[in-house]
Length: 316
Image 1: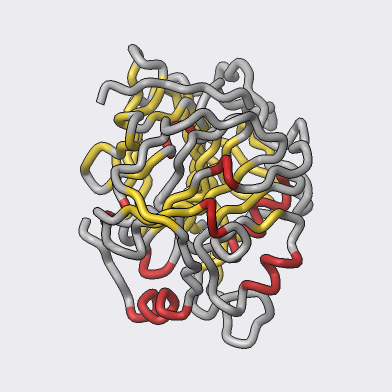
Image 2: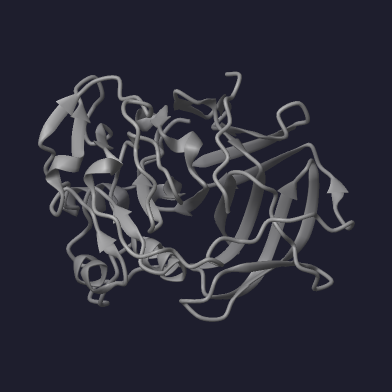
């Protein structure tokens, strides 16, 4: 997928006891500097070989995020308390600042196995997950490994104020050529659909097609979802990927008690929105290293449109 940089015209948080306990147990990681009003265009960043994956905070206190509008692919993941967290993937040249950065989850490891050996930037993780993070096929880039790559915005409340400077973290191996879903012309089977709403227990996403902009304007919890320097965030393609979600169990290696884990290997239902039309279909990923592919209900390949892709992992 080639990067497409667009210039946009320009709920309350539900916290359950399990989420409070989990956050208290996470490792936040130090940051060696401070800053304010982080901008995604501070300094040029060179192209990178490996895919850069950044775990981005998504609660109300973390908005607007920085650099999110320039991601090639954004996964929306279910986390504790019915909330969501984002995994933003950048292929090629990332913005100069990304954040706020938050902690990793087991779902990230399952998703990233299909992208070769990506670089994962995250603020920390619960102790149960750290061995799996360090044994996975990825380059760890948390503040523990690269403290100089992070800074905190003094004008925002902690822990929603940790930001990444990608130019300060190591690169890696070339990403697989077929890792991202292929782009191309849409099948003829789509139905007109100008808007859609995808709901989690404590987050409501809306996507509204703009013919003038050629993309979907994204809203969250009744307000436009914006990114610093980019205005309202847009997606060229939106995919609702229905997945099995289970809770981690105490004593289970590599998982965090009470943390939702989305199963992204296998097959399931999918709905794709692109070009102002909706397509019903399925997703399939036979092994952890295999790329996810989408097809129509009749089995035709279902390519995405050129530009930013949002995939929302929704419990089946």
